[in-house]
Amino acid sequence: MGWGGASRAASAAESLAGQAAGAARQARDAANASAAHADAAATAADQAAAAADQAKKDADAAGRYAAAAKVSADTATTAATQAAALEKTSRDADAARLEAQKAQAIADAEAAKQAEDARTAAGDWKAGEAAKRAAETQRLLDEAANPATAPETVILDIRKAAVQLLDSGGPWTKAAAASTLSGEEAGLREFLRNGLAVSTKQDNRASVVALADETTNPRYKQAALTAFAGADAGVADFLRTVPTPARPTTTGSPRS
Image (tube, rainbow, N blue to C red; front, side, top):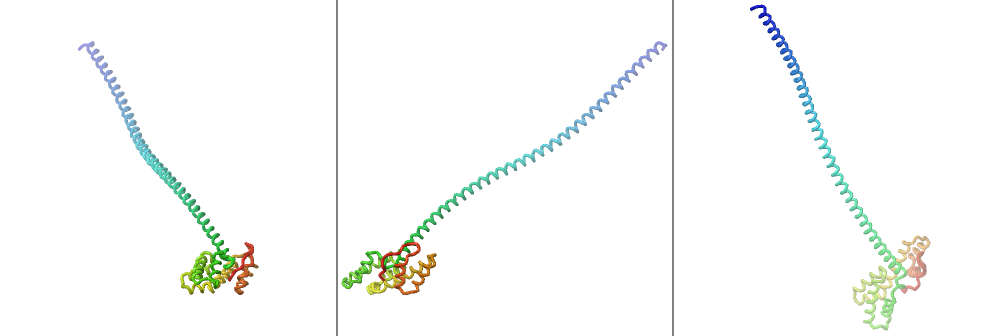
């Protein structure tokens, strides 16, 4: 080969060497780029994993928040239900209390009326049994006591008078009248002769005791007790002539 051929061969070899070096540089650059991409991919993968883990944590937290919210909602619902029930119970209790107060007020009013009626009735017989007898009752007794009255009329009059005394008499007189009405003719005549007078005296004494117990006037109480300790005539006179502190003197004379 001549000088010219060797020169061309050298040039060709040099050109190939340059090309090989360029290719090597490109390969290096490609390798470097690939490594960079790999690093970027790894970083992205790490970030994705971290994001996924955070997303899981966020999802768990969201679940807990949702559960807590449900518990709060259930608690609020229960509280509202209890409040409504408590309000109803309170209304029912108020209604029952008002009804009980109304019933008690009615009962108190009725009891007061009964007590007043009892005081009024007591005041009647405290005036002295014979003095307050109804005129018709006294007429029957007077007619029965008249020797000129026919025997059958006497018995009939005593029975009628005893029936009336069951309503108008004091406790002792009522008891004596009731016993008389359940007995025979002899008992009726005995009631007219003695029984009525005895029961009247007993009622008069009961009247004096009741007046002494009820009064707040010490002088009146002492006068009543003094009369009670004395004879029957003194008891009757006390009832006829001594006024109670709350009412004027009773007129009329007891016929005992």
